[in-house]
Length: 441
Ligand code: GDP
Ligand code: MG
Image (cartoon, rainbow, N blue to C red; front, side, top):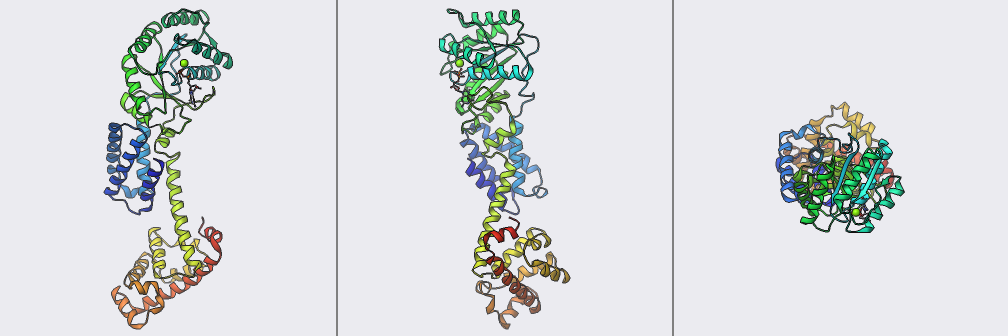
């Protein structure tokens, strides 16, 4: 995905002007890229349509570069969709003891996340938290929570053999009230797949506890399945937020976008490892960058530009080192100057150009002259451009006439070319490092 999008944005960056078709073509690739990141088809389709609409409404010329603008629109739209209405990191835990119900498939990270959030509430908000494992299927799971509780200094409900999840939930509620806890967290059992029993059990616990928050824990690596799980849990139990775990892995997190778009549920936290501190508040910007395969989109565009410029400089340098600087090279330089909208910048970067710049300014150097010079070069044959030495009187006359100018103008251009060729030879001898320095690289 990263490579593909980098390719798209590279291309956008390299193009001076961006047409409507270019935007469309780029968004077609964005759509494919989203699908590869495990974003569901309808979500990817809607997303691209939304971006298309926004991009079309804006004037492309107004932005710094068209590529940057498209990147920004893609990024902003992703963030817009991922962002919920409320602060993802703030759990509703007024009216103590506030129940928090943790649901999800087995192995999704419920128990780990329960302990992580309990620690967070204790450390950051000074809350007294009680944790209870409702996983009666696996005694080891109850032990697991007790061990984590001891490790992070958070109380767990004593284990009583033979109780069912609803009984444990009731006991947790009573214990939380009597013990003066601010929050009690119910870590439910999971199964490998959603089934009626799992849902019925979770629903029964919900009815007893009446949770302030019901957090669905989802493995961020499971992709499309995660969306189905989220939809099912939300329909049957009612979910107030999603925690995406294993985001420390190399999954793209495309499920986050699908989940958000399809269920409308806010993503609240992101699990980033097995350690008890490895949890963070969900940040749409970070996930957006990740779905696009870029940590920082603007930085990537800049990097693409730098790479492109470095490649160009390297190609140029190789020619200069060989003492090559023909009319094609000159035209490349003139085009570049035109694109940069002025002489000042580029002349200042090249060694020994100060004098020539003054000379040009004297003769009223501006874009018009750049264009005339380009016209003169365009009027040369391929052979003449490659070997300007062969230009004799008759050829000069033909070229000047072709560009609608005088032979004197052509002579000026040729003189400039000779001076630049000399200078380029010197630059080339300085080697790559010297040259990059001179070019400000
Ligand atoms: P549960 O069955 O839903 O309660 O899942 P657990 O909390 O027992 O977690 C299952 C495994 O996933 C454990 O080995 C955890 O250490 C691990 N795990 C949980 N969250 C994360 C996470 O964010 N990143 C990584 N790398 N591992 C995690
Ligand atoms: Mg568990």
